[in-house]
Length: 263
Length: 260
Image (cartoon, rainbow over all chains, first blue to last red; front, side, top):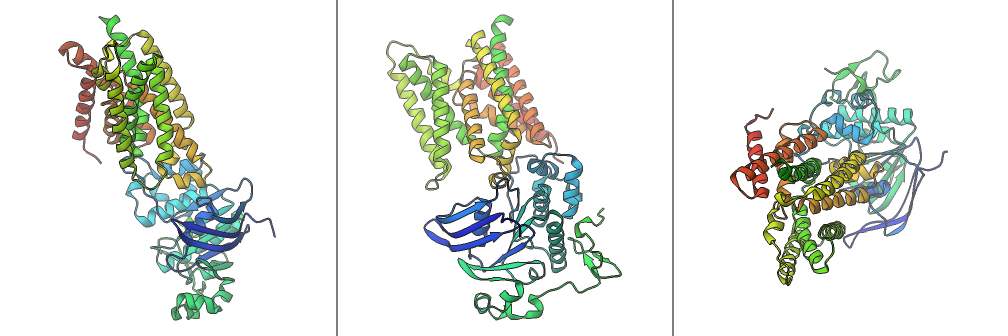
């Protein structure tokens, strides 16, 4: 196993006098997808921000590999209407380079058609995909995504996780995902960390879904194994818009979800 | 006549040129009140300079830069909203500045000239100094353009992507302080924010990228300076207010243009 990119050791974080995280240990290694799950207010975003270096720990330590390139997709960002900024320029801020690279990143995220649009005109879902494109454009060693599947339908989520797996294989990067829901993320995740201010349980999706601590946190609904372990078992893929693309042999040649043609 | 008007014109153009991009950041980052506060502090700087008997503009620049640095630090705390804090600092420094000026004995100080500018009194030396400052600011802006824009779009994304956010933010504040200190002579303490905000706001409707907006704001500001100076010369109106009114006139003209 290669060196860890990020090592969080016995970290506690207090925000405005309230304990948000206590005694957290977390290691992110290249090529692995880790998912943080937990109810609202469990400290998922704070832990992600800690990994990103946006929050400093009150106790414990966070060490990161030198020269770590990070791509971050926040849930949303607000850009002032007074700033004339196209999606293309917005991406340029993250990484200068040829237009082709930006076009390609947008295409992978399924939003190539938005390149010349003003960022303020985007819907929440479109902005998220543009943020994903911006994160991908940096060819990160570590990709952090805060609730990437919010506002995306089931087929779109399937495509999104397919894309993340593909990106992971291609770049060999570590991916840290935040989700408030274990459903669907299972199939695309190597490790699940169940968070409620502290780490309740962690491990493979299968082991977590059987863990009593997980059931206590999420209630009986979480126990439905069929739903929890959603696997790709149909004869077509979906792109991020939910359009179906049939192929003869399911998953023999994974169809790049973001690379489908758009008008 | 041209020998009389040329230094004021060049001085005004230097300020207008830099006010384009700086005004862009003021508008994008909603820093208008911050600019006002710095301008009020500049008056205190002028008063202290008079009291200490040192070069007036050196004192103004020093006080503005110090104030910008202190404010940048203060605004990071979360106890008070930033406009509240700025309101306290702006009016305290303005009051102190007026008191300090009124206490000067034996020196006849034209308060009006500081509040509303006295561009027509600008000589060759002042104009040259303003151009040195303007070129310095423009070079720094171009050099740091992407970082400055990055922190304007999102400080968090910028930090994650390796931009030195705190340092870039401080640079922007210091550049603004430097511009305001220089501009005190053209439009004065009370009107300088308008020269930052109005051309930028006018340019917004005409442009599609931040750089375009900065450039068009510079052009509009320069036009306002020329028009204001001409009106002031022929109609004998106060020059600072004339420039501001000219800028506002251009803004109204841009409103006539339909947005797409």
